[in-house]
Image 1 (tube, rainbow, N blue to C red):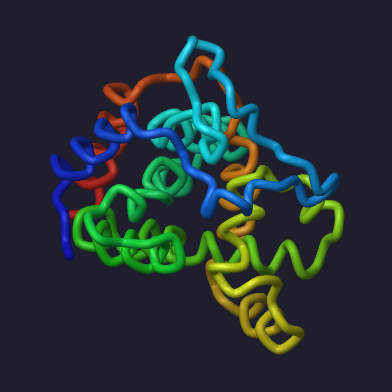
Image 2: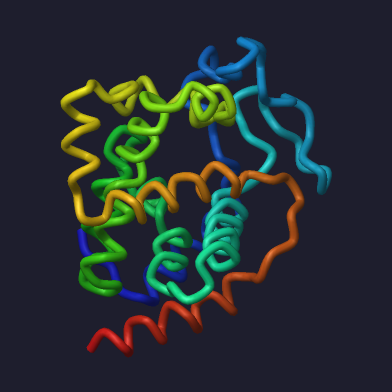
Amino acid sequence: MTISIDDIEELLASGAALQVEIAGADAGVSASTGESASTGESASDGRDLSSDEMPFTHLDHALQTAAVLRHRVPDDSELAVAGLVHDIGHLLPGVGDAEHAEAGAAAVRAALGERVAGLVGLHVEAKRYLVARQSTYAGALAADSVASLALQGGPMTIDEQASFARLPLAQDALLLRRADESGKVDGLVVPGLEEWMKTVRGLQASSR
């Protein structure tokens, strides 16, 4: 499935109405404590949450991840845009958690270019790599990331780690993955979608 810039904007906007879910009602546990990391009550803006929802929406997460990357690597618009769209696969019809990175990469490749698509496609593998390499990272994962890890293949094997580390986009994918985990703050105020779409459209224009 291939989507246009307008489709990207529409899909991201639709994420404002969708809370990020924890994959499986029994899977929402903290990697560090083994206890539930979801409040099961309400978000900071008063939204009622079920026990398998995080206190932020898909759009919140996209905007926060992009903002984190812009702050950390201010001269790399492609990396920030990859952060904005890294989870767009979750908003595509019929796409499950296990395949959302690959589906998202395929969807945005024509509109946003090979590097952005490559980073989108690698953000799950980057999580698997970091979990395998760093116990402190695994222990700090949010409940939704813990729950989805098993569906996504679990920590990488030694051979998988070596293969991932050799990829040209590996280091940038790790930057994206760390921002991904940082972009999960209930109620954090960051630039909105309209502002980011100016960057997205500029990126598209410059790649022609």
